[in-house]
Length: 184
Image (cartoon, one colour):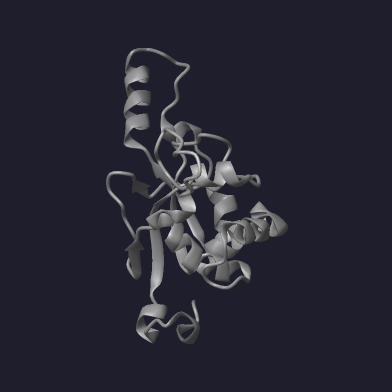
């Protein structure tokens, strides 16, 4: 639970058990500045030369709230911030940010993986929280369609999963009693 005095939160708010109702694993490697800035946008094109994502609305919010989690002052410059990330390494950076979020449970969508990402179990360990896998209804429908079409090479989602059954779907976020759903 976050310290209310350190965060400025009311004690009742600081005590809430939070659930991230839709997240993905995190990358398993360090990134350089161009890669990091590319991850700050969903655009499929590069900005104009000399333009930085650190000057965008998201970049300014990142520079205000993220550096203190890494031991820096708020509004640290991009080079100082990225040097701190590199010095700590991707695993420690992920652990610090996930734990600072104060989450109790994460609902992890494993259906989008542009590169190898942490599994729900690995994400849970980094966050110090529970993790549940989100079932993508599109993938279930594709698997059922393939099964009905007689393609034995396709498995139903439940056939290929280890551990307990997923408890959420991307189109229907769900949180157990006592959790508040928080988008991140």
